Image 1 (cartoon, rainbow, N blue to C red):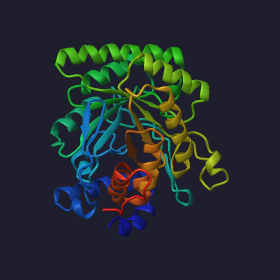
Image 2: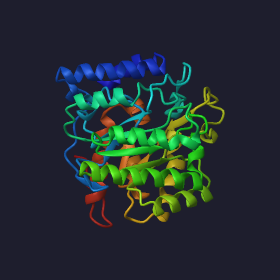
Image 3: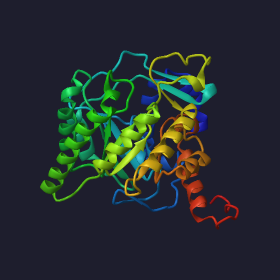
Image 4: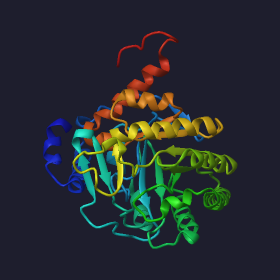
Length: 352
């Protein structure tokens, strides 16, 4: 069905198509027709951060910023769905147009800028959701007018508001579309921020009698020394996991392509190489006790397997869904299953 709908969606402005696609997904879910959009994969239980995921393939943050489509997205067969990024107060984000496709490269550029209805609206939406079949991650950020030197207040507020509702929380310090946000990845700033949030995480865990894992999402544009420093801090702070990576501001992989000069974060196929390199580097620098989530450029089951081989325990998709549709979910799960159960040194068994 997605193959039939894609030409219509690609004829529209990218952000309008995004909104229409989510509304159509909700209609399909409410009518019981979600199975026509995606064949739910058989379970492939994967444990990470002390949680059991039905399968290791998830939805990356950004598609459902306000948590308005949780149940419909979970019905597609994801092992986990991450909503957000959410900020303490509502904000409009950057001026439109702010989302662009590069079809020849299977890529997307966005400069949305944490457009969302605020954490209170997201909490109401999560409270209404049934949440069947998948775990829920909530991605938190800061408002654009909050200075970096007091950004910890925004993150702490969001963490406290979503804590009881999330299966895990992701701290987003790596979006390129909020001015100055990536400066929070600088070693000493990162140590202060993550240290403060780790203290709040433990306080909330004691208060609620349940410890919720906290992950940190990093950028693909970090230099090698910055990756070293980041890994050092995240190890010291004993974070529960790391998501590698967010979108890139680099245009090396799409140089000369029409539309590639738009400002914003580049995702999709051109991000695969760099995001996987960062993933691999982080895996060699973090202890095994800190699992990694691989995201960036997954457009096939083979791409998902490449992320796993680079050190990921879980993977996430977003832009790949734009080009491949919901069928990508099962393809990735089955590719990972074949890799996991392949005889050592032997050929992979056929797809299920």
